[in-house]
Length: 108
Length: 119
Image (cartoon, rainbow over all chains, first blue to last red):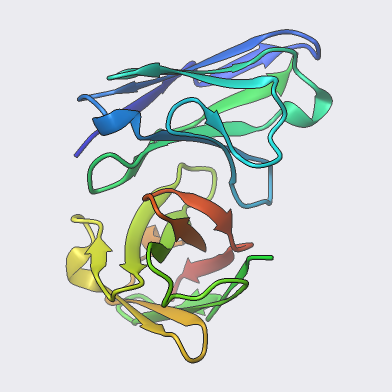
């Protein structure tokens, strides 16, 4: 089973700042099959990025996914007020499909 | 558009069996590549994948819960059912069903249903 470790646990930033979130896998993620979700309180997760770097439909271009192998990054180039949320990575390269423990992006 | 909605009991007692239904619209579980998965989230904690059923009736389960889970589909009703046996308070969580298209991630999610396990 691939274990995904997200860091930091919490990121305290101001609107307009850049957010950099990390997702590290315990072993190589096949074909870079990694996604990022955003989750706001009381809501279901929302797909942001798939295939490590492809934005899902309707996702603003300030959300940028990158990385390969075992190290992946989600960058939010300029934080908007609606971006403060919890972000999860998930690998779908090998079963069982696993999630990271999440990174909370909070307003500083 | 694709929508999914979970239904089932909000409270179950320890040792009971939980049965959750995912009712969906906007896609068919007979279409090649399509699947429906279940994911849960204990209060304040991370997401955990539970099970996935594919258009061809292939099924995948989380190894840690495999002995307790069963996933089935009823394509005529556009429903997927998840049963989990021997419920325990640690199974208290919001349970989500979600749409899988071509790859094993989830692009559409239901709103989730909170299940509490308590005597």
